[in-house]
Image 1 (cartoon, helix red, strand yellow):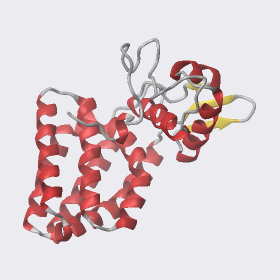
Image 2 (cartoon, one colour):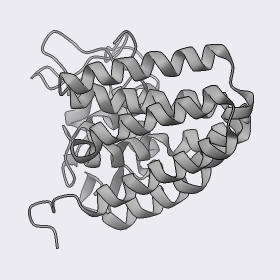
Image 3 (cartoon, rainbow, N blue to C red):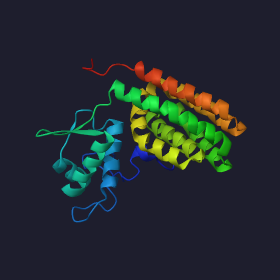
Image 4 (cartoon, rainbow, N blue to C red):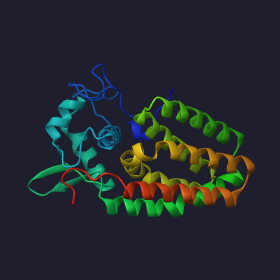
Length: 246
């Protein structure tokens, strides 16, 4: 794939050791002598949380992160504040900062909100989409089936994010796009958990949604997206319990 979506840490540049290598990911121009945007650092850390490289309960210290990313502690501190506000980390007073756990209730709440907003976006997209949007969605679909054949789950998660991002942009509703955008990283976090169970069905559903957009059928696009989100909700409820989970 030529370009990775926000879920892949688009602000990060992976060094020769790879994303989980001993040297850690590098940021553009990272140096302890230079100021790094906290948003770029937060994106890189968030990406590792979504991928499970920083698992739930993992302690994040300013010193360790500064060393891993080659930055000073100041942007690390600000990045962790951003991630706390997004719900990806939690701060326990006098104890430390830890990767948050995505609970079943968290996932249910997110998918419930998604079940309201994304069908609206799909219906609007059927009426306002351009050929550029359709071409983009078809390309993502093709890449999705290729990744599915290769069982590349990481790439599938990234392509899923791209698919829903382009579809929402096709709605032409700036406010709706902004609202869904604020939830996108959390939705990707949910999707990365239920992905192995849902991959094949999810991409078949994507194809049907694109067909509805091509026909300009708003009612069908809305109904298909409702079914798509409900299937994701069901898959999450049926996921295998994590070790130690109640």
